Each structure stands twice: as structure tokens, then as C-alpha cells.
Length: 294
Image (tube, rainbow, N blue to C red; front, side, top):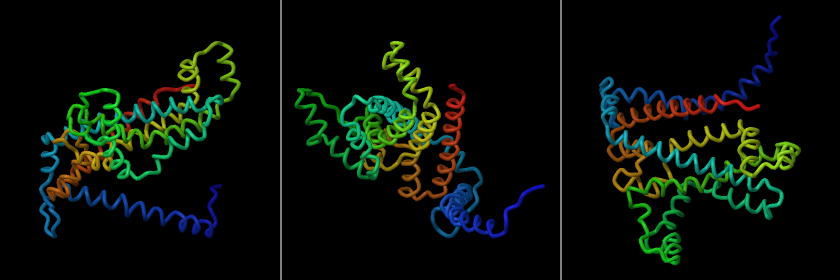
């Protein structure tokens, strides 16, 4: 016999779930539907629109600026994933050691940038990278280095320069995630590894990482999906420049929509971004999910 919830409980569940569902629909579903609709028109912000079919998507396929922004986005994502997840794991392994002094102080200082606004982070690193009075250039000058690069003006290094502030801001988040999992590993396992003569590298890669692999997979997915839509820090640091050297998909969408006032083409770019993000995250999830540890 199938069990059903009493009517009062059903009403309570509906009352509890309806507001967040309405907010989700208002914030995500409805804008997505409108974006999809306008992507098939020539809408420029007025009341009149004309259906143009797939013209915006055809233009997108041959838009070199879009493909350049996609390349830049993927490059930044790879750099940030290595920096945030990789270094976050290394720092967590270091801080989980009970012999490290002031562990709580280190955790707090490393986590602190997470609570900052991305715009504030961008402004801080704009000062750090300043070619005349920036902390980084002054530090390198004191070391006797003469040929200091223009961190935000050199197309060959600008993607690396804008990736560092993003890594710096959120590395503490992944450090905390890994610390929470590492501290739950039975100490007897690590003690047995020490008795067997395992090095720090062997303990980290062959014991710790496999045992916290579910956390590692979640961290990878969060980092990939979050970085693919990166906007704020790069907008403050370079605005996508010099030229198109640091233009990401989100920045390019912003330029097309609000600088060029091509809202319909911006809508098509938004749909393309969603599809690309889903494909990349889906592929990453498949690759990460294909590995099993016991």
C-alpha cells in the first residue's frame, strides 16, 4: 500500500519550498527563457523586435573575438584550477601536520581574501602591479632586477597576471575544504605509512589524496565552473586588454551587450556560454568520475 503524506504536511512542504523555487525561477529560469527568445531576434533594447532565425548564432561561429575570448577563458581556467586546487591541497597537507606552529593563524590569514569582494581584490592587485609604485615592482627592483615586465600591459603574460589575484582570493576556500577531509583520515593509517618509511610525497599522493578524492572532485568542479564565468577581477584589472589579450567570454558578452548595445547578439553569446560551460563541466565530471578509490 502506497503511503501518502497527510494534507497539513503537504501544505507545509509546499509553503517551505515555493518561495525558493519562485526566486530560482525569477532569477535564472525566466532570464534564460528571455535570452533564448531574444537570441533569435535583432533586439537592440527598444520595443520592436524582428525575428532573424539563427543569424546571431551564424555570426558567432565566425566571430574571431568570441573564439579568442573562449581560448583566454580556458587558459585562465586551467591556470586557476592548478593554482587554487593544487596549491590548496599542498597547503592543507602542510597545515594538517600537528608539528606546524600557529596553524590557526596560517589558516585565518590564507582564508581571509575569500571574504573580500572581487572588485576589491582587483583594486588591490592593480596597486600591486602598478609599474611605478607597485609593491611587486619595488620588491623586484630592490633585488636588483632591471627588466621588470609590464604585468598588465604585456599581451604575452597578462593572462598569468590576471590569474594570480583569482588564485590568491579563493585558494583559502579549497584549503579549508581539504583540511576538513584530511583531518578525518584515521591517524592509524598515517602512522602505519610513517612506520613503513613513506615520504611526505608518498603520503600525500598515495594515501591522503585517494582518501579525500570525493572532496577533491567537488573542489575541481566548483573551481572549473566558477572560473569559466570569471568577470569582476579581470574587468577591474585590465578590462580585457591590452587589446583582446585578456578578454574572457563574460567580458566579451558584457562589451557586446552594453558597449555595442547589441542585446540580441549578447543573448546568443549567453546561450553559447551556458552550452560551453555545461560541456566542459560535464566532460570534467566524466573524467574525474571515471576514477575510483577504495
